[in-house]
Length: 110
Length: 442
Ligand SMILES: [Zn+2]
Image (cartoon, rainbow over the protein chains, first blue to last red):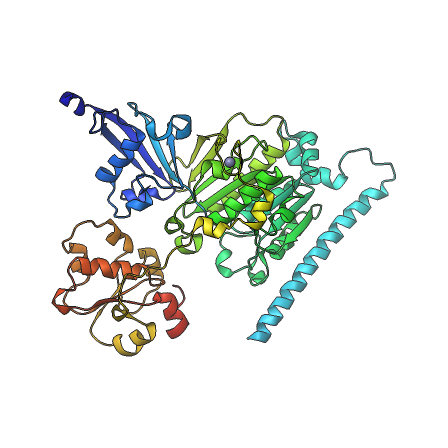
């Protein structure tokens, strides 16, 4: 299948809020070039981005604070260009060049 | 000591009563003055109210109309802590008809850096009575109702039913789900905020009632209990939680006085130390299959009262049990037979906590360093901090992280050649309880 496709990349900005930055070496903002397609040559989605972040960017062993049972753990919101990902199609949303993806962990204190 | 405590309590009680009498007197005097002007009063608010609220009433598009809407409003504030104090203060000052306060805690000294409706002289009083003392002095026109209890499935309906709008100023997922559920069942709008360390979040739920999303629509599943850290463990800056409480007060004024409901659902994110601290995001609407407010909701009032268990729903953190009994020492044994022998004491609390107070001779590697490390070699930051071959005793606050770190050290191979690696059971909290009550902080 299209070898040439795999070299294409999508520039995206990923941001973390609500303590998730702790899992990414305290970086609140990552500027990434994410492969445009996954290993099955399907367009890169949010689900793929979550895997990619775990594999390539997360410095922490506490993966289960980000992913549980193969999905984003409960209590994390995903905002695509400042709108809830539900408005965009959730995990199946296909990344577009220049997207801003914000992961927000819910806070409980008061 | 008992007598001193007793006298302190009595004095602070008298002071509260005195403050209350003084504010009643001030109000009566000003009403008396106005009554002497013989003409019948022809205005919708009293003279005192005109003076008190004039600066907000002349704000464009607020006016007397908004003031009268506010004067009819009954506002329930659940939680009289870091969010509840600023929210209640600004709302009470603005002149609603009633304010209800719900909290089962008493004032502690560690609250005072952010919970400014309380006072040093009122440490030990219930938060609700302490806050009402402060609020009555600020605005005696409002009727205050005290609920000196935590919200529970059995009292939720009775407490919430009589109010127009609810503020969630609590600090745990269990209360957040319970409050959202009862607001859905009773058709109350809910202004919800939270804060932790340097960050805050705020949103308005069930607004308008039956149409806006609820807390479960946004967070259908509770976060794993391991990811829930409270302000008591993780810390909180006063102005950060204060900002969120003030924003809740503003949002409440908006909801009470606005002409039309909002077209979009918004969540406000606040990062107190960031260069651009405010961000508003567009939230989802109702979830069709929401347990509480969806098309076929499973939640009923009777179910909430008889079969809902919010603690079980949110789960509890399991205590860590990684080490064998012989790898753990009690604080007493450590103090009596280990402390003055050659060993390494490794404290794995965060560096800020270590900096506040630690045991003599302890070295610090925060637990996060261990969590971040994925290799299986012994890294430099371990050998630099823990040289030689002496036995290693790991300590933390309560004895969970210490086991995790000790296990990691064993996995790295530091325990080969028979070197002892273990931890101090119960951590520094146990140390303070059993060995050294003078330790100022754990
Ligand atoms: Zn809902």
